Structure formats: C-alpha cells, structure tokens
Image (cartoon, rainbow, N blue to C red; front, side):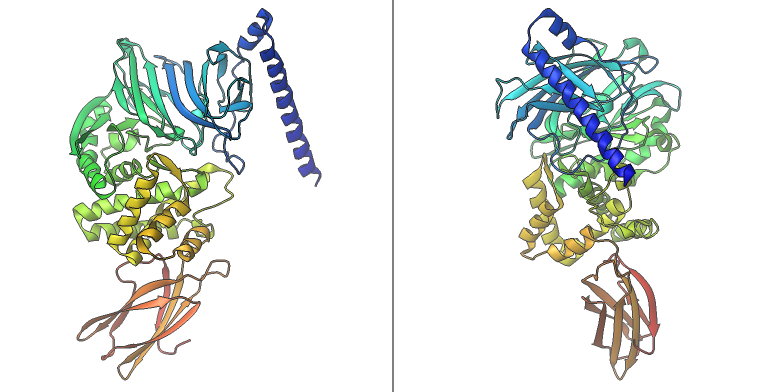
Length: 570
C-alpha cells in the first residue's frame, strides 16, 4: 500500500502546484502594470511531450465549454521539423460556467495568448494550456482566444519525407494527437468547424490538402481550406506534398454535387489508380442507402504518416507503401468512405463506443461489395471478419469496454470484426427494411452530432417496435460469443437435436435464432431453431434419413460450431 499512497501524494502535490500557478495567473490578470503584461507574454519553453493515447478520467471532458470553431494558421518548413502556428478559437460558455478553459497542447512552445483581443496570462503544464475566463462573460457568451506557438511537433503532425525522398507534412491525429500541433479540446465529444491556413514555399512544389472547401487566399504560398460542418478533432488534418491530382467522378444527388478525387505521389499515380476506380460509385451507393454525402468534397490522399490510413473528414489519408506497390486496397477505400457518415458525421462521444465508428465502417464496406459484386462477396468478407475475430484473442473483452486506459488498445477485432458481425446479425434478425430504416433514423437524428450506443439501440427499437436491450447487453457489453456443440439423431421421420452453448461461464448465455440445414436424398430441409438457453433440445420432422447436417449454413450468426456428433444425445 505504500506505493499506492505515494502515487496519490505525488498527484495531489502536482495538482496543488498547478492550482498555485493558476492562482498567480489570476492575480496577474487583475493587475494592469507593464510588468504584468510582460510576464503574461513571456514565452514558455518547449516542454517535453505527454504520452499519446492515454484515456482521460471518466466524466465530461472540458465541462463548461463547447468549441465552436478553430482557425489554425501554420507555416511548414521546407526542411527540418520546426513549425510556427497560431490558433484562433471560439468557445461557447455553457452551464455550469467555469472560470478556467483548459486546452490540450503538448510539446510546443507558447509565445503569446490573447483572450477577447487582449494579452492574457496562462498556465501551461502537463499537456494543458489553462486560460482565465474574463469575469464579464456568462453562460451563453462566446470566448474568443488566440494562441501563438512554435516548435517541433513530437507527434500528430508528421514532418519528414515520403518513400520517394520528397518533403511532406501530414497530420495523423487519432485518437487524441491533435494536441501535438494545435491547441484544442481534443476529445470526440466536442466537435467544431475548422479553417486551415497553411503556408509552404512555392519553391517546394508542394500542394496542400485539408478538410472542407478550398478558399481563395490571394497568395501563392498560402492555401486555405474550411469545413462548415462540426467535426471531431481527430479528423482535422492538413497534408502537404507533391501530388498528382485526378478526378475519378462527380456525384450529384438532390441538387448537390460531390467531386471525388485522388491525390497520389506522382511516381505512384498509375499503380494506385485501380484501387480507386469505384470510389465515386461508393459515394453514390452510401448517399442513396444512408443520406446525402455530408461534406463539400472527398479527396483520397496518399500520405506519409506514423500509423497509416485514416478517415479524416473529406480528405482520407492512406498509407504510402501499399499504393506505391499497387496493392488492391479497395476494401479499405470502401471502409474509409463509409466512415464519412459513421464516425465523422455521426461521432461516438466517448472512445469506448468506438464500434459505432469502426464496426459500422467495416460492415458498410462489406455491404458495398454485396451491392456491386453479389452476395458471395459479402459472405467472403464476413468470413474474413470472423476469422480475424476468432484468431485475435479479443473475445475475452466486451466491445464496449468501459475501463480502457490505453486508447490504442481499442483498435482491436472487437471494434472492427465482431462489431461488423453484430450489425450483420441485427440486419438478419430485423430484416433489411426495418434494419436500414432504423439506421437511417439513427443517422438523420444525429448527423453532425455525437452519440452513444443507446442512441443506436433506440433508433432500431423505434423502427422495429421490439426491445433490443437483451441483444445489446449480451453482444456489446459482455465478452465472447456462442460456442455451440451439436448432437443429433434420426428415427422414424423425426430428427432430434441437442444444442449446447459451451463457452466459458464468465461469458453470457446467448439468445439467437439459428438455421439448421438437413441434406436428404430428396433435397435440403431447412428449419430455424431458437437457441435461448445453455442447453436446447428440439425435435423436427424430417421424412428421410439425413445424409448431412449444417449449422448456420448462410453465415448469419457470430459463433463457433465446436462439434457436430451423431448418435447418443447428451
């Protein structure tokens, strides 16, 4: 217990130090001498970065404030990794009003802070930039701040060279790494609009891509992109490189048109093109199935980042190597495109509900190939997801993991493959009409907002008129899946079956319908059995002795069939 108490003591001491610094800043703010202003504007040296991917404590993030807009100006170097930045932000004060706005920022030097146009003191420590809210502002008012900063980003904005040796800059924010290159409320629960104003030297030959629509800047070295829809910080990105830009299609629905483009490194443009040949068709399919495309454009961008592909709003980044090698990444293209609706426009408000993003993108990617290549394509992809999940070791944890300390650990087969299977099972149990009606209701109710799992459940319940609490509790909030052992016999025109769920005791007993297919000399006989207990025994009319028995032949249930035995029933 000594170690535990020591850690608590250290944390309390650090908290008191931060409180003391903030109190000193408040005193400075109450004065008006030139010395005070000088102290307030004194630059903080570039600190060591905090760790990325650490989950915040439970509860509301940055309570009392709602980020409305970020205007981020950055100057990118031709060589090296030193950057200059300035963030102008608008934050609405919401109830309950707080006296201090805490922004996420780490590893960069802060040169100056202005609040409401006036120089302001600040405390910058442990990845937080803390600013005093002027006493004249109240709930409902908007706090305008400007932060000037500079330094070498330790993460988030990757400044370097691509596989061809050309200088590049690409943002890579997931899960909470925007804080490494601009101040923000870096959490998916707080979405905002954003403008990026990026300067690169004309001599570098680099073009700049970012979220949203291109705005005129009036300067050759300056590129401005703006998105007018609120988006999560983990999807707010810029990219700068030499690109070969091609339009692969323009989709027009309900009077609005979406241009779909590729931004590939010139040496790789030919090799990468086949993976994007149906990229515009994907936008058209999802726009028809779910809702119109939610953003101004869609750019598919080859990038040099730290972790690979990312569904950034209207500017998807892909890892450079597979594109350069001409690998087929079309399933990834469909996955990232589906994210524009699920994850980007409708965003999980907390990380432990990540399946609402990754599971949806995984399943809707499979749906596109069902549409264009037929049911066998869907079956093949779902079989791949099943294999991925069963071989991952993730089954001992639930999909919605309430206590995850390392956010990177959420990138597991539960949130991708198992979650896609959960959606597949819901579709099969509810039927296509009801399932897609519910998905549409869910999307329209929460477009450009944030959600939790219960929001989706309620939409499906509204569409179906059926309670799904039990289904969601077992499949999303508890670990595992059914492991089914089957024994059967046949006599005098009747088949007897015993189906036992043999999964560990700390996994739930699942409740699901399963197809039973008997092969007989006169043809197949199909029955549906409701498995709703640890052991289920049924008798079915089968006129001829079966030659074979299949469980779930069409792949509708996420499960393992561990054995099928004939003879004595147990």
